Length: 387
Image (cartoon, rainbow, N blue to C red):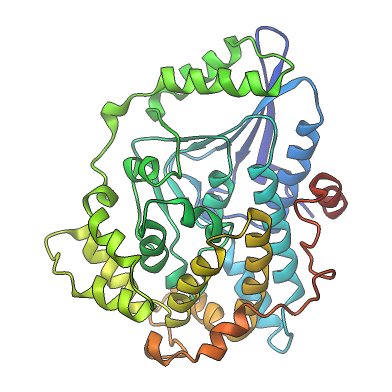
């Protein structure tokens, strides 16, 4: 049974009679980690608002002060993998990733303005929701990361696309190290558009209510852009770690193998910098399969359109459900919590090329791929899925 209150939907009535649709994530014990029910609820409501002429714009938000969304519900995925150990790809896992990527693609291609209030923790699947929104707000406490290397997964939810849009080497570094970035970093690497103090949120919403929204999508985008710019306060921005290390990051992009990239990052003596030292430690102890996947997905995704990136990632994610690395990573970090994953390979050089190639080998024909029509007939396709 779907628990409706995992996502709270409401309408904000504006002064001129239009409405703003608000979807607030509400799963506090898991810091809003997305499960399949939440994804279905969000998709269904976004589609309804998409066709409602009274809805001028949409806000994706959280009921929590600590987090927007800490990722996907990987503990539930671990359970599905454990219960279906002999299955090529657990059906629950395939269905989850298919629905999640459809939702993320819907947000990327939504015609009406979508604003994400990215306060607090924004990780993994939460970044999938945020990355494609047309107006992305960060605050003084935003903490954004793609930490999949610690659980034997990889930066999915469109990471093959948006990590490649970042300044040279940034996406590769963030994918390999799971490094947490702040509001300044998010603006720098194009994961956010505006910075507004969290304390000003109520005032900002009041300004949205007072705006004379029109039945014109393009004008409404401009109105929201102007309001966001007027509400910004860049004085709250911390220093950007990515800016400080950009010369190093640019150098990483010149290497021809992940082994070279790893050696260079680990060779840097930055003991006095806790942020960089933590990134080094995560890289050193992370999954060696993930390291190879990150390097290869960014290379293959570099010139792919968004829909093809999601199709590629669905193939990769389903393989992650069968190889065992992902299951072991979740066990060690979140189930048994011994923080001692037994990775399949002792170094990234030890991972056979054939193993990595297998992650990109589709189990479906082009026509049978669950996301085959993504981008061609998105609304009707997703409507059938959630219906």
